[in-house]
Length: 334
Image (tube, rainbow, N blue to C red):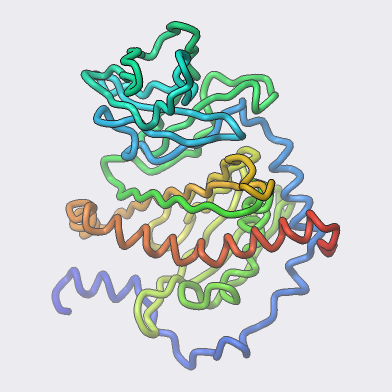
């Protein structure tokens, strides 16, 4: 690669010299104190959510077909009206209980496929809508009965880069665990280079909650690009509400970019075990002029970004599921 763009790219990348084998990297188990992680988790769980739950990507909710998800045991259906506004409510038809997620949307109206009952988003025939919020990346619904908190008018949405200057991607996976197990996983940054050596190297936690008044875990880490090429950054992990953890790049390439992890309780599986959906939103930005190319090719990048998130969450959901199993049987250390 030659030219000004090539020189810029090379300045961002670093070639690792003398890569340390996985088993010889510095152990982090003494620093990853269970009491410290538990304290951060307690602070996260004590924050208000206003009874808002992420149900999915804003791109997945259209005016062509309804979107269905069970949240905290509540069947939810969502769709867009003809103006693009998100509407949501109970997922069972109030007439005879048909699954509205399998129905049709015509001209912004949800029409039940059993007997034709039409819903336009307002109260009708015993059907009462749920408050819904489209933040441009994700869609949330407010379930006051399930949440049991004082309701908030809007969900606690993290600050993000401007949509016009960013590339976003959303991945969703499901595990046998509870939201707190997902949040605890994300509030343990020490596992990154050990558990995900294909993505992270040279990880060091430089501060923890309470250090210097900071409310989060600050981490110096290098993201693997290809071979020995890496991008070093500083990132800070915070939990703005009980089911959300945000990783924000504060220094290095992509400063201001965020990775949001949202944990949504679904309901028990056939064996009575809890199930949780993990919705991870990556909102990436860069001040580099060449980032315009990334924005222009966003439709091609999104599947790659989702695949990368899926690989990480294959492992992290196993971590969260193991934590829930240990908690459920009274065997969780610490």
